[in-house]
Amino acid sequence: MLLFIPLSALFLLLTPVVAQLPEGVRLSAVVAAIFLFTITFNIANDPYQALMPDITPPDHRGRVTGLWTLIGVLGQAAVLLVPVRTVVKIEITAVVMLAATLVTCWKVREMPLQGEVQYSKRSTQQIKEALHGLSTLKQARLALIIYFFYGLGIGAVLPFLTLYVRAVAHVPKQQAEDMLLVLMVSTAIAILPCGRYTDKIGAGRMLQGGLALVLMAAVAGTFVSTLPQIVGAMILAGFGNAALSASAYPLLTILVPAEEIGIYTGLQTAAASITQPLTVTVTGVLTNMGGFRYIFVVCCVGVFAAMLLLTRLKPERAANEIAARELERQR
Image (cartoon, rainbow, N blue to C red; front, side, top):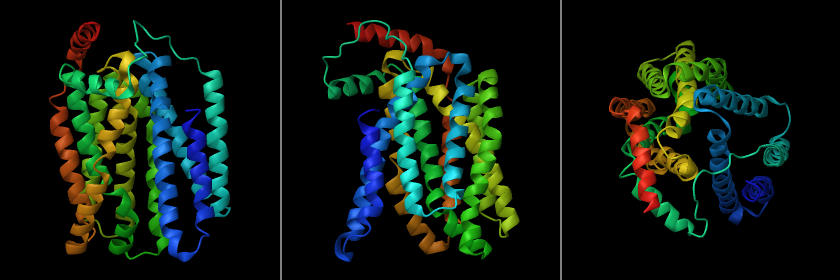
C-alpha cells in the first residue's frame, strides 16, 4: 500500500497534465496514465481489502464491509457533487488517497500470521501454489467462478448506462448521468442493513438475494421506456449492489485459509474484472446491431448463471477443505 498508492496518485495527477500535450500524442498519453493509475490502484487495493479479515471477527465482517462500502460510495458522490473543476477534483482525490493510506498503515495493526510462512518463496511460486490449492478448496473455486459470471453481467451495463438512458428516455446528458447518482444513493441507503443481515443470515444467502435483485433490475431494463421507470430500476439495482457488496468478500474469507487471504483476494478481483474487455466489446457489437437494451440481456445471462452456480455452493464444507489445504502446505 505504501508503495503503490503514491504511484497511483502520481499517475492520477499526471492525467490532466498529459491531456495538455500536442494532439498527436495526447490521447495515447491519457490512456496510458489512466491505465497505469488503474493497475497501481488495484495492486494496492487488494492488500488493503485483505486487512479486513485480519482485524475483524467472522461474525462482524458483513457490517464492517457494509460500512467500508458506504464510506466509499459517499466519497464517490462527494467527488461528483463538489462544485469545482475536474482538475481540482483529481487533486483532492490524490491527496485524500495519500493521507488515508498513511493513517491506515500507521494506525492499523495486522493480526500476527498463524503457522510457518515461508517468505523466501518467489511470488510466482506462491501464486502457483494458491492456484493448485483450488483443487482442494472446491468451495472457493466455485465462488471465484460465481464472481466471474456476476462480474460479466454487471460489467455489461455500467460502461453503457448513460448512453442507454439517453437513447431510451430521450433526456439530456445531465439527467442521464444523474442515474449513476441514483444508483449510488440507493446503494448507500441499503448497504448498512445489508451488512448487518449478512452477519445474521449468512453471506451466501445475502449474495443470492443481491443477485436476484440485480436480475430483476436487468429484466426491467429490457422494457422500461420513461425516466421514472428507469429510476425505479436503478433503485432496485442499487439495493442489489448493496447486498452484493456487503456479502461477496465476507463469503470468500470463510472459504480460504487466513494465511493466503491476500492471494485469493487478488484472484477474486481478477475473476470479477477479467471479463471486462471481452464484455465491453461483445456488448458494444450487440448494441450497434439491436440497440442499448442488449446490455441488460447480457447482464441477465451473467447474473442468472451466477445464481445457478451459487445454489451449488456449500460454505459448511469449507472448514474441512481448509484443513486439507493446510496439510498440503505442510508437506
